[in-house]
Image (cartoon, rainbow, N blue to C red; front, side, top):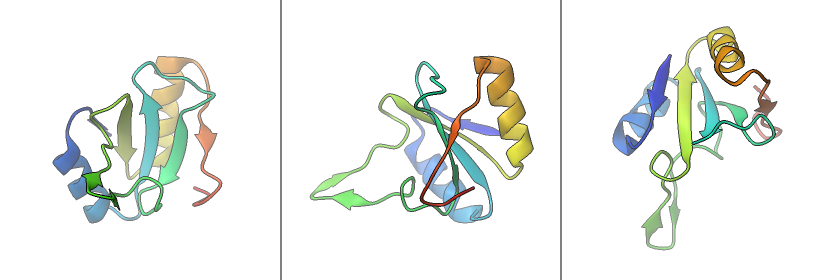
Length: 93
C-alpha cells in the first residue's frame, strides 16, 4: 500500500502505472461519510486540467491511499479509521 500526501507527481505516476489498482480518496482527517474507494482508472481521480489550473490531488485536504489489493486497503482503512469508506458510483470498484 502506498500513501500519497503532497506528492502529486508520484501519485500521477502510480495511477498511470497501475490501472488495475485501487485508490481511496481520504480527507486529511479520515471521514467514512466522505472517503471513497475508486479504481485507479476512474476519471474522477485522474489528473485533468480545469482552465489553466491543474487539479491538486494530494496537496489539498485530500490524500490518496493506493494499492493493487483492495482487501489491503479495506483492512488498513478499517483498522485506522474504524469505519467503512464509500464506493464510487462512477467506476464501481
